[in-house]
Image (cartoon, rainbow, N blue to C red; front, side, top):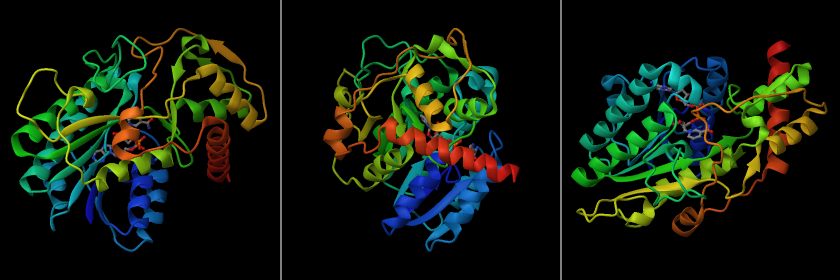
Length: 337
Ligand code: NAD
């Protein structure tokens, strides 16, 4: 297949493209090398991809309709949409940036997808959509009506926009609600890497929620595989309450959302212990309250993902965190050297 991928220079995007190329697909990608974190790291990822046959890059911005439309000539068979602004706190401080990239940008991509007559779109949503939803673990059928961060709200908004095009234009839309993704070649702005750097430098680390917050850390390469399974899935599906759809009857639409996580809960303190062990130094902890935008416990039910796509996570934190930390410390050493 020819597959269009947005956000291909990103942490998850580069892994998804690698996996798709390995499986013989041709890729047309777009990224604007946004400077939220090192644009150099993104260029490194793209340089690796550019050595592969079947990879084409458009340097462009999804907020610009003309850039987006360049991905559709010639027409791809499917679209994977990953480009977005990330970060809970940042989203509360810079709403306009998040709304324009995550909502208007999404609108441009989905409209161009429909206009080009492409039948399938897989896009990144987030566990942040659940926010204050009562009842754990979070299931797709939960209302997800109360995200706690503007970031989560933009992702929930994307799911709703996707529904309108699934319903109105028959576009097969799969929204993947990723939990906390980590791994090698990761996003240096995420807590795990900041902790590793500060512990290594002997600096104190701020531990939100007094270390009691619970997260589901999912390995980046596993997430990439889930994305690929969703793109290659040709089965028919339609809106059902179990797949996060409305409980009232509407004309059926090829729309679903799926949790992408491991199903295993890890306390923040446990993650820090694993980072300490990987760094080989003890952390100096500054325990502080959680931000209002942070969910205390993010436990996600992954049975639907297993049932529908046959996904099984392969890497758990005991194996993954040492690898992620080693990659990051090597990366810092390379930058310094
Ligand atoms: P990332 O920041 O590494 O990747 C996003 C990519 O999109 C970057 O390369 C960036 O340059 C690009 N981008 C941003 N704005 C753009 C624009 N306007 N036009 C073109 N390109 C643009 O982040 P990631 O961790 O790889 O996340 C990928 C997707 O998964 C995002 O949609 C994110 O919200 C979602 N997600 C990530 C996590 C996580 O833990 N990493 C969790 C839940 C959901």
